[in-house]
Image (tube, rainbow, N blue to C red):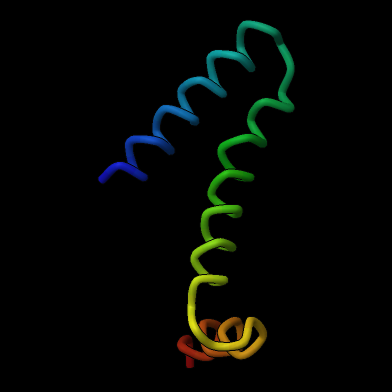
Length: 61
């Protein structure tokens, strides 16, 4: 629940900053934070990194 709240705050702050300062680069912040969070969660798996990535993408089939 805390992570959802944190990502919501990051998104709201990013949108406000992008609209106030008229810089669309601030819209990248929420996407980068989500990708960083996913990367950290993948690193926390006790398997080698590439095997974990292969396993995640193999779940589709």
